[in-house]
Length: 241
Image (cartoon, one colour):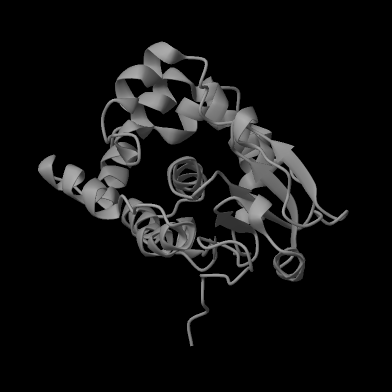
């Protein structure tokens, strides 16, 4: 029977293991190596325990400084947290135009962001590659935009086909509907899907188009990612040959 990628961690809604995906050389991504999530600050004590039992020992926090809040329950001492803010919000010339459109909330901005700020994505990928032994969980707020961008890059570097990466991105939509309902907020899912459809694509399609138009490895190397980082990342992510 296939393993369940979605994880039930109390206090989070959009958590899944990135294991079991087909990758380069006929290999698969390793279960327990990487987990993408919405903000882990919302975890209860039981949620943190579930995270530990899953094998996670490093958390990579992609949020901006002003988004970081006190944890709902004490963060276990076993967890090392690395802050790798991905947005680069100080670059208002970049964000002002994107924030005026629904492009923010879709993968349509990923390519422009990667080309303008490769050092930010490279730093986030390096944080995963250089983590101590054990699983790595990375998160932003909802687990869609920044977590989606980092998941896209990590999986591409492991040789996961673009279509599989796009399919993973699409899994977030149903999970966020539950999160927004819990928070009493409007779910943008339908509106974002319509925005993408008007442009002749989907979330998955935008991921595939982005990956087809970029050399991810060379782009990230231009941002400071090293060959040693790439080797460590692949060793962490991929099952043994």
